[in-house]
Amino acid sequence: MKTTSEPMPEQAESNKNPVQGKGKVKIPRQPMPEQDPRRRRTNFEEVPRGYSEEVAMLEASRCIQCKKPGCVEGCPVNINIPAFIKQIAAGRMIDALLKLKEQTALPAVCGRVCPQESQCEARCILGKKGEPVAIGRLERFAADYARKHGGVPDPVKAAATGKRVAIVGAGPAGITVAGELARWGHEVVIYEALHLAGGVLMYGIPQFRLPKEIVQFEVNNLKRLGVTIHTDYVIGKSETVGQLMAEGFDAVFIATGAGLPVFLGIPGENAIGVFSANEFLTRANLMRAIDFPRFATSPIRPRRAITVGGGNVAMDSARTALRLGAESTIVYRRSKAEMPARAEEVHHAEEEGVEFHLLTNPVRIVTDERKRVVGMECLRMELGEPDASGRRRPVPVKGSEFIIPADTVIVAIGNQANPLVPQTAPEINTSKWGTIITDPQTMMTSLPGVFAGGDIVSGAATVISAMGQGKVAALAMHRYLMGGEPPQL
Image 1 (cartoon, rainbow, N blue to C red):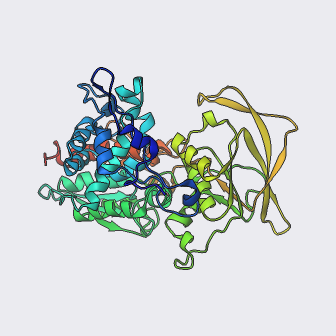
Image 2 (cartoon, rainbow, N blue to C red):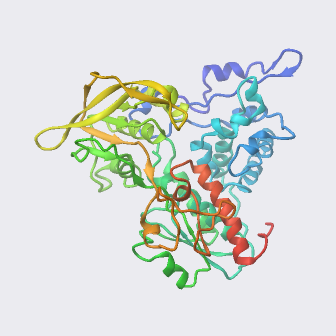
């Protein structure tokens, strides 16, 4: 197993002579130490091990401190990226975290799960002729360093405003809004349907990608700000949004996400052994089925598991099934080039031994006489002309049917907006997809005083995009409540 104290061979080599050419500093991008694939496929420990202090400073020194940094424009929450990296390069790790915290409530999370390669790092000027600065890895390092060394400062709050705000859902958008409004002096109460706050960060992303203690650390920071969190509280069942407003809340923010799974619509899909990715991952992550019998959630013990889909959720599901002891296979109807999953996640799945059936489309779940899964009938595909997504459309190859043996099928082809709150608040306008319609400048819904953000507005998207909408909403909510700008803290 590789650790941060034992640099990988290419890392050690890159540290030997960073000065090349005519005195110009040319430091290669520093690789992230990781668990060996042969070991990590048997455990739920985090795969990347993080930078050491020395390597983080070396990587930070690659940043050329652009006068017009494109990386900031590429960040949905507009982190001052050169500023926090400059602090790391100088060895001021706590100052780096403070700079991050000016714009993001979840740096340790975003440093792990955000698609930096298509956002901030995609705009790094070094990437035009080489590799961009490892912004995400440095963000993770700063947050982890401060947490491990007791350097997270006490939160600073403005004087109480007397205004009360209810937040429905404790995922990335809800956490972001709660933190901003609490800092600005508002009384904030969160209502979370599940038994732990964190939303998709808790139920959807596996421990080996995002340790749950990190999420709960950030949730506890909200509590330090005075935010009240009610769990096991389902708005739309226990109460409605209208009742919250009638009880004296001055504003409401809806952040219920996109938790309604999409299925394939093929024969046999109701068989025993077919799971939505939501159920499979929730049982493994939040309900700790992986730790049965220490946790009372009944275990999932697949022997041959097929995951249908090509996104990050599909990679998470297939890699989780692998760790539960299964021969794990991904079935995806397009080619590897069209996969929406992050390249890093696909690479990790391949390293760990997940088998990929590309250009393959499921047409039927095969069952036995007890209606249990015994396999999946698939059809070979070939790529035709691009469709509305810009990706080449998969076209069936006639007569190419074949069966993959399996006892478990996990469907990871997307999610729709959670319908519960809109169904119980008819005054809130929704789209034909069930998402809540908001003013993009303020995130206010058609019901005055009620705002929304995250996947319930955009449909299933990224953690950082949900946080970006949360920041827009928090500012608009403060202006709605107070008629002016938030205090400078």
